[in-house]
Image (cartoon, rainbow, N blue to C red; front, side, top):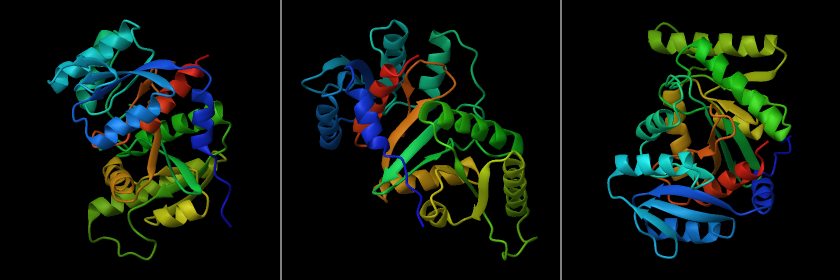
Length: 280
């Protein structure tokens, strides 16, 4: 029996309709699909394109990716835009520039929080930060999941049904590869911790599909390395929609992330507008 998933698409559209907002997006490769997504999103946002030139929009032309990152953050810092979508500039460069311009203490790479929301058809779920630096030890997994749970509850009123993903099945051979054994042990301990705290959590080992079919609304990959590849497979080969990926470490500043190879930025822009309209 599949649990009812939240209709995030309707939710974000309804929130974005309340008021148009000025959103800057960094685009270095303006292919037709990207341009079309901007035209569609212009019903909800006044879009500033940083990087390439796209006719019909306000443009800040800068062919150098690192310089485009600086401009993107400067527009946000100077309040010339109300939110940003990172788009096609580098994560590390843009985030470093953000901390520099906003004079904030940089968050260690294993503690940055960009929680994704994905959907396809009747299914939708959150997943924890899919970065190669995440989930490599138990302490970091607990940190990111507890912050994600807080975000789910406070922003959406959602009680998490958690899928802790592993890397070996219970019947798999142990002792052949120490790294796999270590990850497996860590995932088991992590699930035990969540259960001990009263969360609805279950190990699904490598069966991501079963976790989704059984209605889990928070997927926790075994490690960020695995999660990164899994997420990109869903987006680029599986036709899932990447609805949201906002930076959770920065209060009410609207910093929407994503992946650099996306073609369609409609939902990222809509979600950025929704965040602006939901500021407390």
